[in-house]
Length: 492
Ligand SMILES: *Cc1c(COP(=O)(O)O)cnc(C)c1O
Image (tube, rainbow, N blue to C red):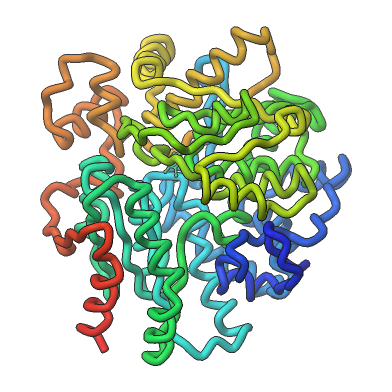
């Protein structure tokens, strides 16, 4: 298997090379050249009773063909185990409110980013050996809240990591998770601005050729932990199969019966992995792409027009507060079979592009969105009906799922990817359940939430408010490069 750019550059790269490069030279994203053949029913059957690690091996070996099975197995065993995850199933499926919640938040940082970021650094390290890389890697990443902490956890002890987050665009717990992170070679810095500002600032550091030369002379190259890297995308395919097989094994569907997936979406990485799973033969009918008030994707699926020229709102589901949804480019490439160069040029020049809406529908995609009130109501309703408490991102998807059922009368079984623990967003979640909580402090509410659930505060964040802040940094939008330079100079 080789990887090529979405934008038409003909150079093809081995998986290990694509992992290290991150982005193609023409600015495109790497996609598999020649997708693996789909699993047939017999193959699906043989996968159905595998545990998470065994299943991961069967899927990852199709995409990381220049890794040996022994190497992949070592990466997988190190990533998905009960030291790293607080549930032995890794990604358990919970039935509530007529849907099935695939809980992807049992890792080190309580968000679904752990699913990929516990594996990605291990793959990177091997890839650096395989490609004979003679420089030290520095991971630079912009985060809307969850990637930052997950990257610090995942890369700690492997490569140094600098994360940049929007100063007023993350939850209190998300911020503390980053600023209290211990370990060598890690730093977090707040950028004055919103997520798109932070992301643009970090991207411009990556695009700065002069800076790259300066770094190279110090023996350093930059790499990103963002979801455009194939090391983030491919591991996410696994849990779609795993969730489906839990339905089969629980007698909820017959093997081969199609299901829907409903995914709360920001940068389009998670739902793209669902699409890859479908291409690999997973029986999927509809892929519901759920947006929050930053509904650029919902509008796109409904009109065929992608229009990022709008205000970015800060919502209670901050990890989805994004207007430039990077991974969408890969979908456009796959469904049109054509390079995305002109679409992306149009996006860069005018902030918008147009695409054939029918083609997207034919692939099973629909887009819906939930505003702040609708998603808060969804949390309260589901809690009152079932006692199950979901986080604010998952609530966007649950609301979209209910609306879809109402609109279409569909009774297809639906898996909702549950992307964060409610404890991470305790204040928004508790205020949705009862306005009396709106004035209380985040950490008091974490304890109240544990009481409502008759359980303990997850060890991952227990006592976080008492930990010393180790990373107290702030910079301007155009101060990211300076921050990186200073950080390196202090250490070289
Ligand atoms: C990152 C994130 C999302 C959005 O995922 P994408 O892959 O960017 O679409 C949704 N929910 C949570 C909690 C997240 O951290």
